[in-house]
Length: 407
Image 1 (spheres, rainbow, N blue to C red):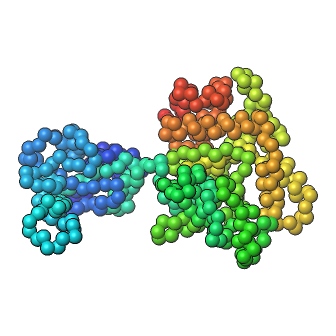
Image 2 (spheres, rainbow, N blue to C red):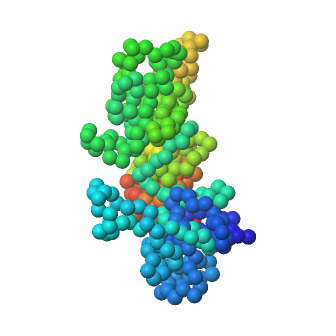
Image 3 (cartoon, one colour):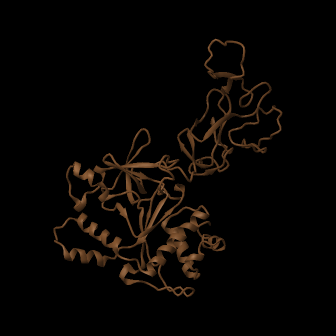
């Protein structure tokens, strides 16, 4: 078997495991060609010769005891500038604009290693999780600031621009620092054809709809939407045509690293039983007028998490009783959202929402995966312990509340 893994977890565990820079992923003992394909987040170096005398010792798994930074090899032969004992070839010369200088100064030549065929090993250059497709091995970096959208992802964004029959949506859930530069802000485009018109009317968009775009969404509005298309240059095309998507009001937004929010079958979840008497602060218990204290959580894959009260079924029944039975569902939901946006949130419900918000913040502080189960676990422990909402994010309580999620 010319393809021999030296990853410390074993033979077929090179998938979805966390690795650090400089960690050996695989070793090929083929003398003619590599037994793996190098993906992003990795680099290749030669397996050192057993007779090569160097300061670093390598164990049977190919791991270096001498350490060192990722991307730098200490196995260099004398007179070489590349990995292992391979010879360096000039593959690029810096063009200084003077083509007549042909032999004088060679200081601008850049030497890049050309690896010869032989035993090689694949090493991680970034910290992240390993992905393997047949012989292709890649490391997906864990980055808190970069989100690579995929078709079908639920995202929570903020409108930062209106014009040209489309809205510009920031997927970092925050407004740009300055109008001249958006920095590393990830943006998407929401075309006018990708939203529902008032009343759920199905028709071709006209110039009048373009002029009334700010009646639907204006700068600063938060909304949930879905990625409809990823263009070749990386631009994300969004839509809100599903009745579940749209403008967000009367709630709380929490921003976490996108790597902490995993893909799920359902990103709209309801947390039940998070209200109750807290003897420490004398807060009010369950409010029957607001759905019994249940809280809705929208888990955006871009790191934006929206928290709001669960809309009571009594509100929907009252709206249906006041309108025609043949009224479209879109019209009913729009009236329901309007009532939710204009109805004041009670004190007990605000406390439940804040408790869920601080539960998510606790998980973020210890870099735990944010799931409905982990959020509910932290929130219920805080209720059982009688912890005030404001005290949940104190360091001593963060460690205790997240103990079960970190096991």
